[in-house]
Image (cartoon, rainbow, N blue to C red):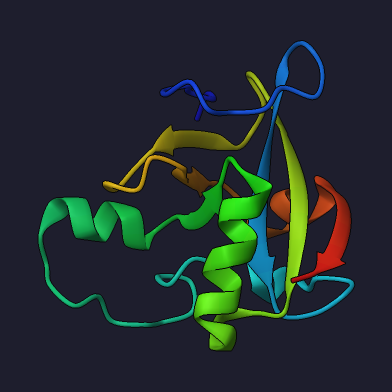
Amino acid sequence: MASRRKGNNIQQPDSGSVLFYRIVRGNPPRVSDFLSNTAKGRRPWNDRPETLRLWSGVSVYDDEAVARARARGIPGIGHYMAAVRIEDGGPISYEKTTVDPHHYTLWGDARELQARVLGVTPV
């Protein structure tokens, strides 16, 4: 899958890549922090094609403050935030998804995602 860019809120750490924030459970994050709900064997709440598509990816945010607020609002999803750099044209694809203006979905191998972590901070 090629990378896709939609929306204008993505921070660009350098040309050819984008920075996202993933809420994770530990520091350092494990591969399991980057598994989709599908890969975890979780059943989606409905069988609509869009739900199934999002279920096969992982949620990230393009804004650190928004990701931090989300993690603090739902403490069960994780106590840390990983900054993840995704290069254009690489093995990870991304798309602006849901009604939240800062929410994106990434699709790709969990190990590939874990390998792109630049740093981890507590929320």
